[in-house]
Image 1: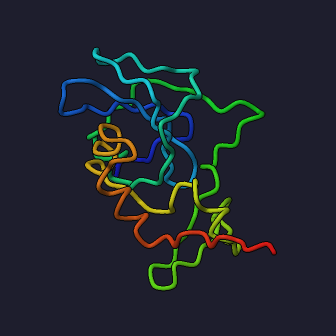
Image 2: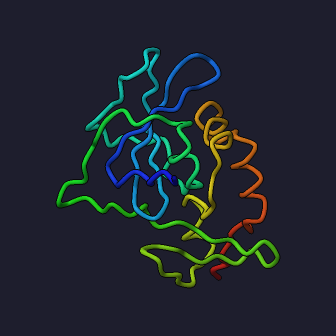
Length: 156
């Protein structure tokens, strides 16, 4: 029997190799927001916090295989969007950027995409690497390689 994907607002626990625990809040469209706070004790998610280290897309099995146990609910309020924030799409050949949000893609200039999360689907080991290494994550760095540097404007 196939396990159901948790609904938006569900909080899952991610065991880290250093013995600590990270937590993620499920979003629509295969998204998960990883809370910045990491705990030394299992079962202590920062429910109510909106301080996320990052919000990314994940493979369904990350949330349905039992690798990450459900530890609570952090429901979306009326003023919160259960969809992940806008994300950049970077063409690996041309380096051109687009923005993906609410299931739609629109053209964008490189400057708009510079500080955005890159559209990708992450596996659990990628997420753990990013939790532990932040912007030095090898997976994050490899995705950013294709992003062209913004051109400097020349005003005369």
